[in-house]
Image (cartoon, rainbow, N blue to C red; front, side):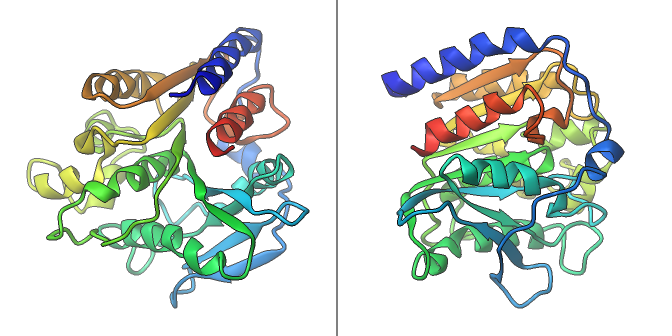
Length: 293
């Protein structure tokens, strides 16, 4: 990690102590917040759910890019809508955002392997978008919340997949870094501890004892070291994805040799990290801008 980025993360960690009195938001409260709409909705595939919202900062560019991946326990019940304000805020900070939709559990073709394949296809579609929009593909960051944090970390790891994998791509787009917001980095642990109920098992099509190869290809913790810089941001009061999941993943990632930092936010729950009017948002925006610029 560069000296500049070390200073940035030191600043972010110092800021955390100011948020102990943060109010935690429920799922329904977040879903009721009006969201900024994107100027451009662009298909990256033929399925109705294979699209993304592109937001461009003003000016000539080229601009760094954040691939923004929503969560929702990989379930068809939740879509990219609640990430609109977060994406718009990053764009105001000078970062182009490509907020992607993908097939999820409950959608035709969702789960294994379609969910992973969609996210990979959407990420690689940046090369097509760069032909028309001023995107700097040397400065691409993946940002994911909750189940989207799992997928963002997986994007950072997929260059390690063998050619025999259903998820293999010969030339995956390179990432400068990953920002995981309350991400689910260990699918087997998530299933065993009832994080998102049994949705991790539904995503993978079964439990790890029967499908070890799938978990080795799809769970970030099984792909360590990822070989890409990672910032994990997690609210200490998160009741949906326990903070300890990021603590344990950071320890394993660091031991593997990865460049990884966990920023724990006292008083923050699951959704404050993606609500720009929350106190915790400054930490998120700072981390993304620090990696992308």
